[in-house]
Image (cartoon, rainbow, N blue to C red; front, side):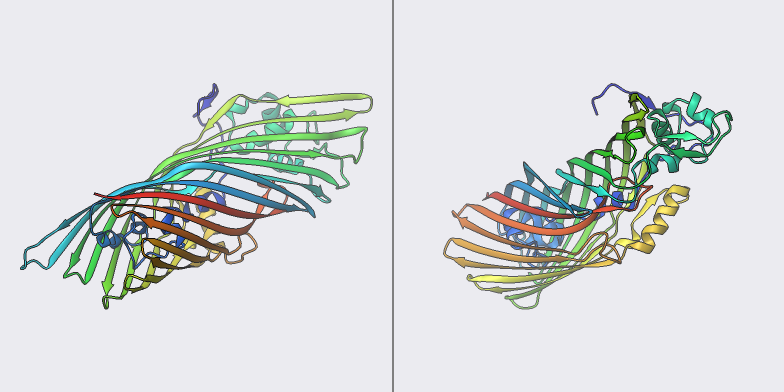
Amino acid sequence: MKKIYITILALCGSFSFAQELTSQDALRYAIDDMNGTARFRGMSGAFGALGGDLSSIAINPAGSLFFNNNFASFTATNNNKRTNSNYFGTNTKDNFSTLDLNQVGVVFIFNDTREESNWKKLSFALNYENTNNFDNSIFSAGVNSNNSIGQYFLNFAQGVPLNVLDNGNYGNLGFNAQQAFLGYQAYLFDPVDNSDPGNTAYVSNVPAGGNYYQEYFQTTNGFNGKVSANFASAYKDKIFLGMNLNVHFTDYVKNSSVYESNNNNPDLGVQQMVFNNQIYTYGRGFSFNLGAIAKVTEEFRVGLAYESPTWYRLNDELSQSISAYSTDGADEFFDRFNPNVLNLYPTYRLQTPSKWTGSAAYIFGNKGLISADIASKDYSTTKFNPSNEPLYRNLNNQMNQELANAVEVRIGGEYRIKQTSLRAGYRYEQSPYKTSNYISDLTGFSLGAGYNFGESRLDLSFANSQRFFNQSLISSGMNDTARIKNTNNNITVTYSINF
């Protein structure tokens, strides 16, 4: 991040420097979106037993053997994300669109023509894909009849000595004390005993009475990318075996701003506040895939594939600022505090869950095909490391209790009319939570078409998916959430060539 900040790496006293992580931070990397080539998307990713597409090797690495020639493809996608928010009965919406090059890959085919050889075909492929596009924006607004955002800062302050807030330096404090320090600098609360430097109890300066108007605006940018090196071989043109070695890399920026105003006591206390955060996460990861496809008959194929956990090493950077408007009789106060500090946290590790996929496909000669995949992914095995750290241990226990094994279903079909192919697909993904109140099940459909020019091919697809989730305006101090409906519409174009 190219900003001028004081950077903080030192530890100080008994205050923890661990950042604030949640299960949503883990699921950002544990849940993969459906990306890839236009043909792959046009059939909703149901390619586990089909192969013959560079994106299919992410499902089953044996699929690279179903190319007849050396092959390359390039894919661009227009991503449009619409969010509809309901917060205490107030409906708001936002819209965000991006255009990116999300897939490029090549596969090389080697045929062994010796009659005595049982391994007749080898393939080697390199493929890059965006497994997630994080570009999005969310706006929520409504009147909270119960809780003020100021409670977030008050909760962190309880137990922090007054002399730390009076004489401390934001940059030398741990995360919890930093949040208390921000609230104190904006005069959101006062000590119970102002004369005692060891005072650890505080009372809010936000007028009670409810009816707090609150707004939340969030923008996210970045991606999660994967480069796969694929190796596969065919035994007697009946059994197809493959393996991927994958390198993952991520770059994610979230800017959030929460605003609150009230008219409970216009003559005394905090009337308005704005709290800004920017979190930047970046890092690398590794995973592997194993897969097999069997030709039961020339028309019918079955497949089985395993995707290992992805082992990430991640880094977080956080910057914050706060401002508040308060009154005290005839006096008005505008308090702004920007510490100009970039908090750099120690590298941590994240392990996402593994996945098993079973597949079947039936090919109707040159007329078309139908394919189906069913996958299982146990999100409760997601964990942060080092697991002996209290922060990670508690969060891992929470995820183990709240997250569940989820099933994914993908069904796709293709019908060919001479050089033209028509495609359609359907996908369903269960919520990663035991209760879908946090994140709902996902449903989606897709349509596509392609034209084969002989040595090259042009494909186009449209994919839609919808999912609901709860969005917290602040991470603690209030349990109220906005209910978000997230709708993704993607138009994808792929150009492919045999060589």
